[in-house]
Amino acid sequence: MPKIDCRKIIQTEWYQEGGAMAPFYISLAYCFYFKRVNAGAFYSRNFVAYSYYNKRVQYQAASALVNKTLKTPFAIDKEFKQWQKDKIGEEQFIENFQFSDFQKLSDQDLLKLYRQFTLLREKIWGSSRPYILELFNAWDEHFLNKVFTRFSMNLPRQEIQILSSSTTPGFFALAQQELLKLFKIYQRKDKNFPSKLELYSKKYHWLQNNWAFAKNLDEEYWRQRIKKTNRAALEKEIKNNLRHLQFLKRKQREIIQKRKISQPLRNFFYFFRRMGGWRDERKKQILMEVAMADKFLKEFSRRTKINYSILKYSFPYDWESFKISPALVKKWEMKEMILVVGLGLKKYKCFYGKEARRTHQYFEKSFLIKQKEIIKGNSASLGEVKGRIKIIITENDFKKMKKGDVLVTQMTRPEFVPILKLASAIITDEGGITCHAAIISRELNIPCIIGTQVATKILKDGMKVEVNANKGIVKIIK
Image 1 (cartoon, rainbow, N blue to C red):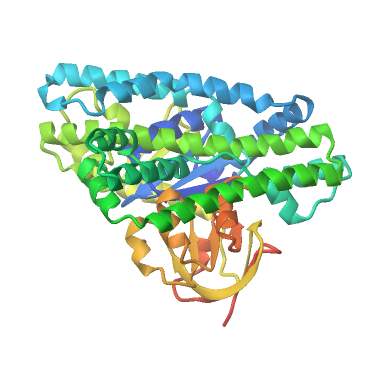
Image 2 (image 1 turned 135 degrees about the vertical axis):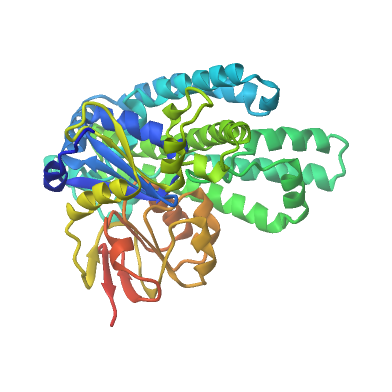
């Protein structure tokens, strides 16, 4: 039995991320990333997950990228375009097979098709490009200060946020625009509505997926959604989003001119803006990948007669055949797994149940978290409010949110948007200035503090807090 160097776990400075995740959908991506940075871990229990990255290794890679960016305009574009090429094969595969009838395939043909899908996933995640976005979650504030000092520049926090914000509409906004067009066709009772509805359904069937659960939004779902659509409200939402992007473009030009921003600093801010847009594109790719992986998983469940929910705790490489050992099934049934790379292991290793929990406890010990009355993070959207805490980890927690609550989570995701509109403020464990919480909080104009690393562990439902996003401080009110 391979042994993990637990002392090294405790001695290493880790950056923690998390959220609702199922190992079958996302562990392959983590496996490749951890191999690239020599060590790391992904832990999931009942679909609540944590991942751990070595902060020092991230710093070295991020530092090299920053130096390159300051010297070379649009350096990030080359990496982004290559990433787009890397995912073409997977996109074509999904287009060809997402709506195929897998039940008609033999076991051999289905496994062959699954291996082809896995190879296409490896092409994307085996590259360093998708992980550029992760490097700065822990270090963007550090590099902002370092670069500003180097160029003797001091900007107000609000201007930094504006200059770092992407000005391209995200996939969710584009889906809303297309939904409005479809709604107008429906209202006109156009004979082409059924065919347009079918196309829209196939294009956006994955829109409400996340890393733990896949929802196939079929034609009937979208038909009912359109029937219940308030045209005025949808048009207002779309106009507000476009108006916000136009505002950002205008303010970016004004700030660059007013502050006489040098070319290296323009390169620096362009890098962060590009990362924001890339992050949205990667999220879309992941949600589509989850839909395809889920289609395989449902068919695996049908053939093996093993509960679909249990199979979500299988590792992607477990499926070399349908002759699954009872011992492996028992491990999956625990719904608790940790994937570890490095740290004394020659390759990756998955541990389950109590063994997984014990291993994860070493990572938690490395944080040495103590109860605090003041929690510190980075400001993503300015403002000050007082409110009561609601801890939101999975969609099952959404029902807890009431108007004016302070939403606390590991990281917000697109499926959070409806409840984010109820929040008076947002606090997250993770994230940098281009993360989802940072972007959406600016759009909603509510205070947001990101990157606390400990908020979900210290704060509890019902606690009253004072959120000062101008200073990045959360104070518990007794």
